[in-house]
Length: 265
Image (spheres, rainbow, N blue to C red):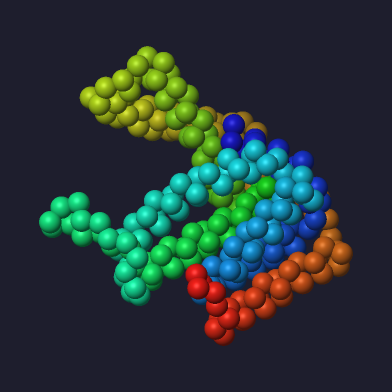
């Protein structure tokens, strides 16, 4: 189960007992810096540094980390491929005319924009994965409680977070059963199987929601999900490296914003 896989990695991480606020500061700080950077250098450096930190000091499995990066990489490549042919500006680098009415061109501006988008997605994805793979969701929910977020909103987020993986597991089980019965062997069969999957998934999710309500009533649910809060205090030993790292990224951001450029930036 994906939820158990992520939580297991977060529980086994060497950064598990660092205060969630420190890791959240690192995640949000690097995420914002990568988003506002006009150059691909900053998000590329941020992604590479945090990847090394996750794999070496935090002891996150490289295989798991690579599988998580595969999803954003696929969507990013598709988006970059579209940007190469849609964005203009600069010198013409490549042209292809498969038909008289179709003219595909890649310019220097489109290539630069594609590289920037790809590096931004990489840096932002690694920033989010850093928080996900080092902090269990229970610590984040407890941190929200200490921050004064309404308890009703937190409980709703807990239920939604849980049901994302329930629906995912049910869809995977139904899909595997259909594949074993050759449900996707032909286009017509694939359409019929997919529509059946959607209908069965809606019904099974509805039944799972009713089962949750019954279980909560039997356990005398009073409007609050109790959870054990054992967060470590914020320590200067972990806060100082985060501050230096964000200052380092900010310095590179200012340097690249003032015209310190390479031919590809």
